Amino acid sequence: MKKIDFKAVPKRDWIKFGAWAIALLLFATWVGSVWLFVIPTLLIFDNYITHIIPWRWWQSSSSKTLRSTMRLIEDIVVVLIAVQVLNIFFFQNFKIPSSSLEKTSLVGDHLFVSKLSFGPRLPMTPLAFPLVHNQFPWNGKKAYIDKPQLPYKRISGLGRLKRNELVVFNFPAGDTVPLKVTNPDYYTLCHLYGRDRIWSDPRTFGEVVARPVDMRDHYVKRCVGLPGDDLEVRHNALYINAKEVDTPPHAQLNYFVQTDGTMLSEDELYELGVARDDIALLDGLDQSYYPLYEQLGFTGDMTKGFGLIYHLPLTKSMRETLQKHSGVLHIEVEPDPGQSVFTTYPLSDLFDWTRDNYGPVHIPAKGETIPLTAENLALYERCIRNFEHHTVEKTTSGILIDGKPASSYTFEMDYYFMMGDNRHNSADSRAWGFVPEDHIVGKPLFVWLSLDKDRDLLHGKIRWRRFGTVLK
Image (tube, rainbow, N blue to C red; front, side, top):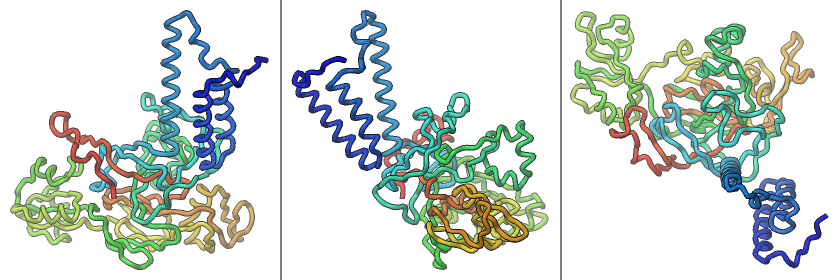
């Protein structure tokens, strides 16, 4: 074995090793893993001090191509490791794909998300391709290996999740996914079409895959309900513990807008803040819509029609601005469509909740015990079965949890209730239920890039005014 002369080691190498050792000790103490200190420290000690492993064997090669290639590989590996560590423990980029948070965040916004805000979650699926989530973008193939699966662990962060904060989380109903139809979620599809149809029709629904918690799709919503809260939506107003809470200033609802026949141009609506995909124009002469127009109180009759009717999502300020338009006669909020259009959680005949009138519902808290009534089982069975991994059986003599008779259940995790600010165009907890604490990813801080899908590069594609926008 090679004899090591420690006295011959340059002082600067000892200083470099010492700095790395201290940093690793602090990091391992924070994460709570001795192996994150021991193994990297031994490798770094050898790199700087003992040189037993020929780390840069290629430097002595006579091949210039080999030396250049290996230097490039080394740089890429170092960068990948550094970025992966940053993504897991500190910060990560996310893109807003849908309009559920408009106008708080816009489609095409790229968000800088802090993992430190609520405490970083350690990877539960360790064997995954770096810098890719659940699929390779070029072929849609799975970018991770299912096993091993590590237990959920969250390390200390800067604080706890508070009410009304924006949150990035893994989609809780995304544990099972038909790859060709991802909206609505798998459970709603089974409710609408039957489980056998989903699994036997890959041409329509695609392959059905199961995903571990940290490989489920990312969503961003506003946390409106905390563990232990009682939540209710009454005529679009949100109540927490029987008290009405303030609506976020950028919150939107869908409205029907009646004009005197004046056409609202696309540019005019764009300046108002309405995206192209959100503009719908209804025929004021179509008699099939007349009962709706009369319900809304619009002026018109069976012979002359009702003018031009627009269907638009508007904030309070957008509505007030549009009301001043000389051609606008009436603006009325969209009536509650009921469950025929917006299917609500839980998918049970025991509840007649709708999008605009939901609850009251209790949000589970860790350590809280509930009786296993028929209503509670409908509400919380997915929490017990899918998130806390217990078997649930309904027998003629009662409920069995893990094969044992049970009249009550004690929750093992905290749960949260999420809603989008675009209240009428958001698939959120009203549609797919509670978000468990192990699904929480991080807190969006600000917008670092924003691209408008309705514009080209020379005409406003880059939303410069959005850069640096702090999300509240």
